[in-house]
Image 1 (tube, rainbow, N blue to C red):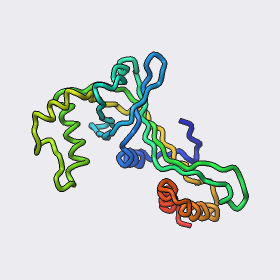
Image 2: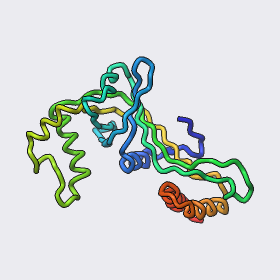
Image 3: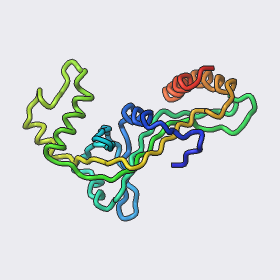
Image 4: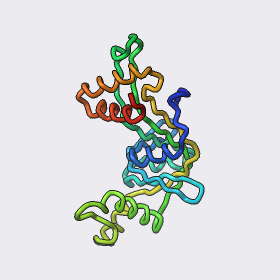
Amino acid sequence: MYVPGHFKVKDEKEVWEFIKEHSFGILVTTENGKPIATHLPFQLVEDEEDYYLSSHMALGNQQWKSFEQNEQVLVIFPGPHSYISSSWYKEVNAPTWNYQSVHVYGSLRVIETDELRNDLSSLLEKYEKHRENGVLWGNTSPKGFENQMKGVVGFKIKIEELQAAYKLSQNRTDEDYKNIIENLKKEGSTDAEQMAKILAKQREV
């Protein structure tokens, strides 16, 4: 990923938090030179000094057959983004796009049986525990879940490289920055509203 110096995120802890918050990522592999991708929920797992991403996909999704062909895979975690008009600057310049994105490279291995069961149970715990009638591994039919496990391919990716870019108008003056926030609020879209909140949090103007 192309990351200009002033948009590069160097704080790993900040990147880990971003992945947790935007955990629905895109797994990219290649098959016979052709890129293929699937949108999947990921969990960030810390194991001693290493970090991993874990997930699973449907057995019917043919992408898992490409795993053995790929020494490394790419997972993309996109965040909020929005168009930035140059009319919002004091001096008209080129328009641009603000965004947050993290790319993760790593080696993948398939997980099965107890390891897959524990990973799926952890995923349910994350998204169901706070619900009034949350569906957890221990409070529903074990047989039902065991049968569903047969229909998925679980995997774990050892994280070997991180690339993180936050393009958030860092190179604009305070006056331009304030105008960008105010105009984003007027855009009337969820993406623009999210971007305005992120910019306001990054810099007080």
